[in-house]
Length: 484
Image (tube, helix red, strand yellow):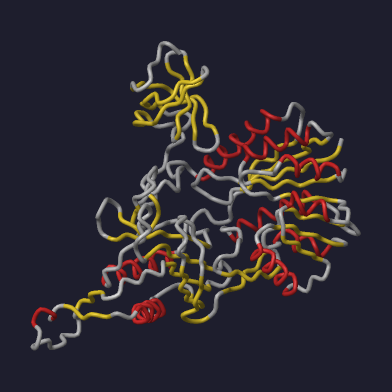
């Protein structure tokens, strides 16, 4: 490592891509981890960290493209917003890259043979997202108000979104109208450090099966009071020439009314069925609400997955790729196998989607989820689908498992990105079931948890990936784990 010095620029060849969006660069006989590079590229990087025989670099420039980068990026925001990383690849090559990354991770933690079944494609490569959370801000300090996504690598700067390709065009139309209206009213966004300002987020959800749309404007309670509105109606202010160009208004309701009328008059592919205004004064930069007011319509729509109906509210969890979710849950159902006369535990059950897909052919399904709203949605959705053999419990899996008297025959796991608490894994293992199906949105967390299962008499029988997020670095993985 003495050959390379921290802070200097070097050039090397990328010999391996590593999840999620990292690469191993070979340079002067050393191997350096560089974020944002891809196998086959030649890159210039700045050595940023050297510690315990490991070194990391920051990508400066791609000096030579990989041979698999054959496509022109199709989005005007490519490389600016940091969302879609792989637009220079064909979709087939993207799938191969993701599958290769996951298999490398699994092979690194499994010292025995298992069946790797590759990766299932998303039914839609573009316009697949059914939910987007946009932020208000500016693209540079004291710049014009923007509404969009964070610039790549920036905590503060917000890129104005005009033509996002992984959403339906309705999203772009709505964003354009909302930001123009807020600029007209000269409204300011809530600044992250001072927590002063009115505008925070715009949350849009669109049902893939019906085209129904929910629009939710999230603001603070800091309505600015007297605001200036351009005088577009040629009102005569002869008694006060200084007011000839503006009309003053103190009422937040007037702004929200104009927002509502304007949105409802937009020319959209789908139809807006609910307009909401949420107030959030929490300093944390999270999309949530202290209060929700329905300006027009309702606060939900229905989505259909594999023949089951699900009620989706503005903040409820649901897979962001509806048609991709059908593919994912089909894999899960296949891995679970025969559930007739069997009790199934669906741990980290969210809104109960997996539970309700399994329930029609199971003796019973018990879902455990820590988010109260998700549990209430799960109960409601089970009722909508006429399922009386589903039970949903609100609480931490780690604690709830101590309270459950029922014993499972099969366990399905779909934890958050950080994976399962080690003590919860011990409790799951103690049930001694023959079949566990693990659904993971982060293969590195999955690998860590699999090592614990492996050490306690379980082995992975087969694994399959599912591309729920085309063009991004993210991938879902499903593993069938059996007791040896």
